[in-house]
Image (cartoon, rainbow, N blue to C red; front, side):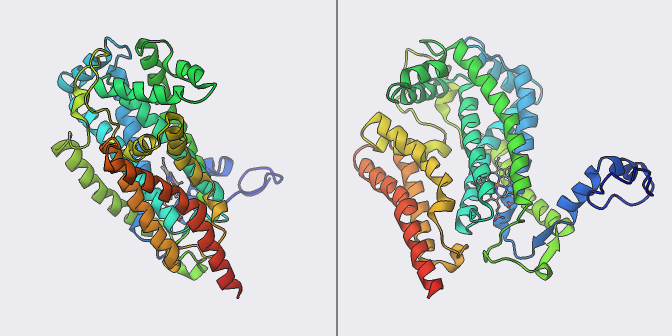
Length: 404
Ligand code: HEM
């Protein structure tokens, strides 16, 4: 026996919690408290992180809010074609506080996607995908796909006109995959007519994915804690240039959260309809196609790509490929220079990438009609060229520069 009361052959983990209280008793047997202290209190953080490093914490906070509001919405929601729209109306008008629950959930979805795009861009800009953070990057992209699927499934649930017709467009896009398309479409929709089976499937998918996301966020953060965070210079930091996570980054993250909460509250409570589509306040009817079928703003760039390519399957490949290509970024960019701060060519290319993404969103908004079709094609071409041509070329040039 050693001093802790445990047999000698049990190896010590992190420093056990000191003192003789209940917590230290638990910690000596199940070292969760010392592990928490090591990973979230004393964890050494670079001292030069800017506000863009706040978005991971913001995403975690919004995720908790989405789960909390979602569970209460689910308790009052009816997943049937006849009952879905009415149950949402009941939540909005009769359930005490129901309007606030829904406003928070709907605004939360929009701002979650906005925060996700900023978080992703930060990683791209400062080269946080590079060795040794590849798994961190890949798990983040896994999260992106899961969040997109969850957001799409959630948008179907109110069974308004946009829910119905959006699902119809998505189903037809999936059906355009050669050979297996019709089978995939049938699996997705469940029957020939979008209705009860489809809503049920998407309700379960929405609910299950939300919890699966929490699990993958756990892995994502664990993968971050192996090498520790990158920083704006992209260069490794010395121990003397680090500060403990608490109190330095707990207070910084809290400050970021307060600013974000102000924007969130303004949108959720003062302008709840700013980010949503009025057409979805009409119950779904297969007999009346809305004049404009368009997704939520955060899917518009992909919708723009889908429409800019002449063939349906080609459009699907482009839209899917625009996400898939991000998985290859750590291997497309072999430069040893990490941060775009020190890569002027790459920085200029990235400004073009952001412009192309915004333009593709506008193309989606204008249904790739007339001149927008040309804009959509150029922007799509640029998007892929950035990753497949510019980034590898830029890396090669830099490697030659550093070797010489
Ligand atoms: C549910 C979605 C996500 C959550 C909750 C989440 C959470 C976090 C948290 C808490 C951090 C540490 C704080 C920070 O650096 O901001 C982080 C870091 C990171 N995340 Fe995510 N993340 C998500 C999605 C993504 C996505 C889509 C990507 C992009 C592919 C990504 C890539 C990264 C990278 C590269 C880092 C390390 C950044 C650095 O140190 O430079 N994450 N994430």
